Image 1 (tube, helix red, strand yellow):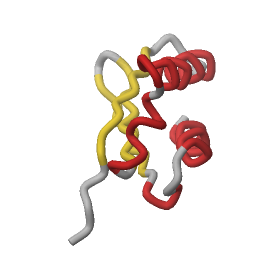
Image 2: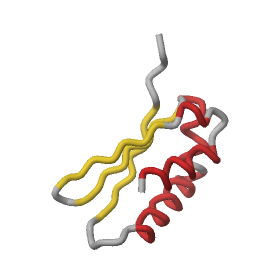
Image 3: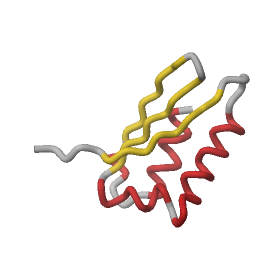
Image 4: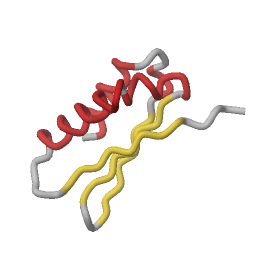
Length: 80
């Protein structure tokens, strides 16, 4: 699942090397944390959240069990 989200995000953003995906398991299901460069947040979220909603729909379709998959989008911290 993380490779799928990474592939989608890297093809949407201007800085694909800044894409970072972390998967965490919780009682309620999987949480996928997607971090991109500050300049690319808008591209991943999309107008009125449509792109993020589409990524979530793809994640739900790719899920092989009954667990819920969540997508969290965050800004990647700038390197000092």
